[in-house]
Image 1 (cartoon, rainbow, N blue to C red):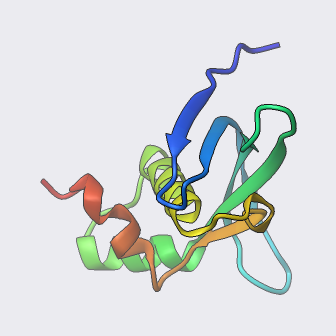
Image 2 (image 1 turned 120 degrees about the horizontal axis):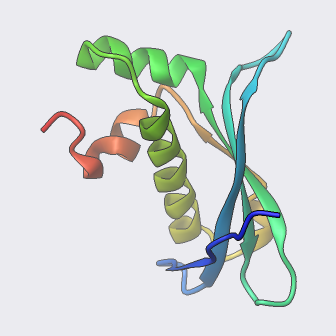
Image 3 (image 1 turned 180 degrees about the horizontal axis):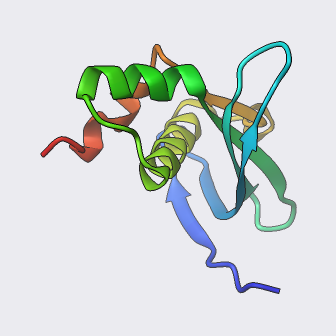
Length: 119
């Protein structure tokens, strides 16, 4: 069993979260949006934990690739998922709302902007 490195994030919402990365997988759908799914185990009370899925939609990656003239790498997709997870931590004071989070075509630029990937 792999050793997981627990990390801590203090959200702007006032909640302190502990989390670690579980896995990523390609998400294909017959109906709806496909993409890459990133799963994180999250706790806000150190007693109970739950899984949060962050999906980087294919349309988001395609939009970013088109505007930046290069493919979005796997590491950069993970970075987008983690930055979106942090934004969700900042925005929600109710951990139970954090079950399904998306990086979409409409928010990928703002999610990745703090990382300065083009510099």
